[in-house]
Image (cartoon, rainbow, N blue to C red):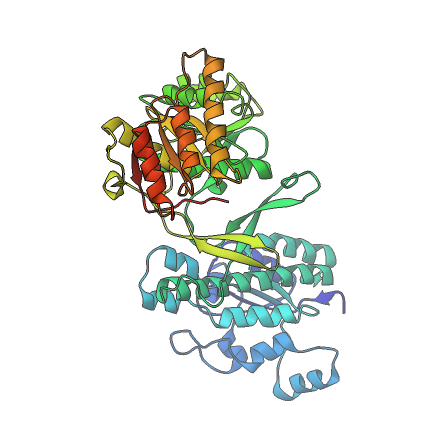
Length: 529
């Protein structure tokens, strides 16, 4: 069967958006409207004739509305294969009439959870009859049209008007696919709540993950790859995917990836003084804190003026004109901030291709959550790296303790190193990165690269010495040998922060003492791959 003439529709919705208009359109085509409870009331208030489902089934709604559509005269009318003689005979024998359209949207389970409702109210908002009707109608889409989204009402009415009151098989297929996705998402939300909120599990036997497609992207990491952005259907923290794009070209896959890295790092400075992060290829190439955003940007930029070209800039406070003017002096792909004042927006508007993203309040860097990484044949799932270290957590392991300035630079460098791809080495002085070594296969090379980049920055700026002189150096994992530490000594570092835990810790500590370094252990590692 291809086209199906619509004679009867069953409507039962929580969201009454567009209901009266849809009911009016169906009635215009001579469709009998069958409905329940509040939906029937809303249709009658719109002046429409409605048949109660209890009249159809011969049973009243009962148990506070929990039982109303779970009946053979409903599901028989939805599931019957109409050109099957046995099915047609059963319908005739039991007085079951066909139902041609089902309009259902489900109890607001996720919204109930999101508002902080108690357990009893959450449970009461688990829809049973609705999903049952949706699945029955969607399974039998050869004959039945199923609508679960008010956004589809217009397309249905257009189809009915164009065909004289019929639905096409193509339309019913599309609606069925959407309906099964809707019930899958709904069941996933329920399963997630039971697993995480109700049972307190971190890694349930089945991990329900439901995403809704956002924009399709021009391409993926490379032009031959296709890509799209998907957004979590359930509760989630605000991140780069929820940022408001004020101007500029559409974000690319790589823009999203780099912007996420920048936002995650600048979020570490939430509630602190002005901070700026510059990211390239998901690694920070300059980070600084200062008295103003302009000063922070300039200090971050000076760390690596080459890599900053075409990079991502993120700040932790609303942008002003001075910072905007400085940022636009070079080509910048994306700028991220909680907000931007009118003057700053005017300045950015001169660069029509620059993407300006406003995030509102930055997310809590200590929030919990899970991260997923695809591998061939599966996914690796772990808790977010929300570990944070304060001065009270550090263990001084050398004869010399760090000074107050060295301690502040150690903690700053450690914060940055958490967001640098391993092996990571970060030199910092006076609240700004001096050199960053990222992603090398051994720690010694990362230390050397970071020192070389600091020397190169000094040469370009005309400084008498690189900013590694008198700096603190952070290592995301322990130094397995003293050579990496000695490379930091050569670069001029005077303080070291690292996790500790190597079988050669004593050798490394001895080398630090011999060089007059102050070294502290965090007891926490921050690998990032």
